[in-house]
Length: 279
Image (cartoon, one colour):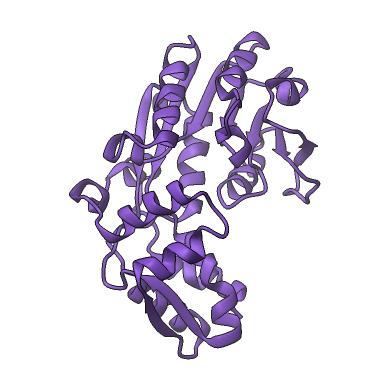
């Protein structure tokens, strides 16, 4: 049995589906009741404390660990989940980390994530670490304005990074959970090409079949909008990456293709599959 945390999100849902279709027994864990793919059982659990996940781990051979916002909060103990997994006989943990632990290692969140990576490596468990860059699904932030006003408002319109399709992250995660040859490594996951917000807007418009206008925000305007939903430190950090990505953050990684045997999906593919969210 394989336990998938964050199972109703952009990565967890396709991962749960892929594992179930592979014939695996899957326990899909989320904080709220939800419909999960056929073949999986669902468990509502609060991961902020390791006890919340404990019952799901009994009899599990592997765990996909995705940290929710609660697990990044002060006083949270994500390392305790790894210890709990080891104590209950889990053999393998695949951790969803972030590219930033390498490219921008000194932010508060990334210091904590790097420490968690180290905890996993030292746990005695089989392990794999996934380090995606920007998610294609972050474009869903624009869905309401596209639906209501046919506009995308974002900063740094002509500065891009190779955003990765969450379905590709899920595909790599499934391989790491199912195949021993993919353990003991960290995988940097990106899309196949650098794409700017303006180009993403064009891809969304093409998927919808009608025009969508791009409106460029100043950094200050973007920060004001972002801090309504996230801490100011995280907003500033995100804007630093979006506005001045390093060469490492603009590099197209070979790791998706190395694991999946095909090139990563382009943003146009993600936009076509998710066009209904913008209608």
